[in-house]
Length: 306
Image (cartoon, rainbow, N blue to C red):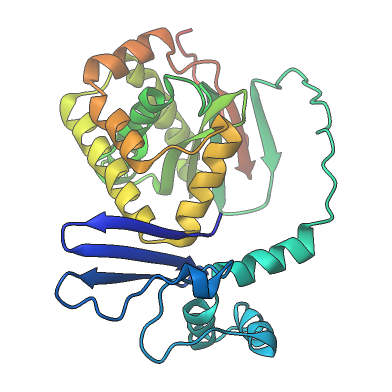
């Protein structure tokens, strides 16, 4: 929901008006200098903009339509003008006009089919080979999700990660290699990818699978520390982007049925221990890999421990 946020600070009152995706404007009334920030609910009524600077005025009629049109302009200055002058009530009114007559319907029933495991090759005439590896994990709603996330971080978070070090830096096998957690509401998985030359593809696959098996042995304290810093840095950066924060909120609502605060997520990350992550890996070791390759020649998956 788009709304004004008013909060007390030691130096006065903060009134944050969140409009559009280009600018989040925060006006602060310092105790000694706050002459011009005024709350006038009697004057503005249902109008959401309760704080005006000198010279600002309410936007009405055709001007509202003009500003709404600027929201999708290719010109950044136009979008900033819209963000600066539109109020939440204008945007809410337009959303209600466009979507107010939608009728809720029961979602279609999911039809679950057994997953196709094993290995598949897609022939493609190219000097490059693309390698995809997947295995089961926990969904985002699971209490162990961030333990699983930390384990994957040891593989793929940053230039000190195991995939980057062993596949790219030490052996020069791949120009791109990574792993990531993915989730539906009920199921989770880890997806791994590498892009490499056809002549190095088999060795790339062998090294990646070897690192996935080695992950069962656990992660180290320095790896967990880097992962915690990286995840929390991402949370900080997320606060600087309205679209990123909106996407995060929507994801939380879809997966969890509620929105987690940044403080809540940060506390979960800070509470992670090496023992937590390694216990998770003991109970949920990477295994039963699905391998899909695209390139000139099919690759052979080595025999792996179960």
